[in-house]
Length: 122
Image (cartoon, rainbow, N blue to C red; front, top):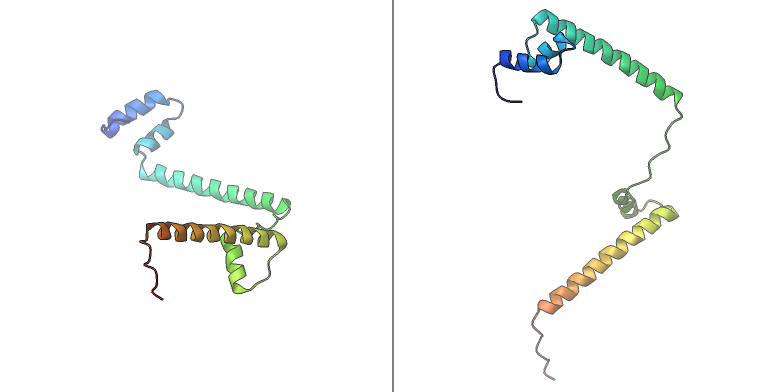
């Protein structure tokens, strides 16, 4: 919205949303302190009701299964010496293989850029 005085903004927003005068005045910031306090109480009441409703709905649902471990958590468990399942071990091996391949490529890049060593004298 363009930069304008609050009174001009009020006129523009009132034209855009004529259904609720308080909403327009709230958006522009022209509510009285009493109206602001009443609005805050209304919002607080709504939040409390929504929280109660969410809690009731959450207790009615069965508990969620635990999330599978991420790759980093699996690697940490392996380094700590904790046991891994077959799936976790497969994920760990795939990660280890990619790291091995990256190291191999790095070594080949370094060797390609180096000058060859002179032959040793016998």
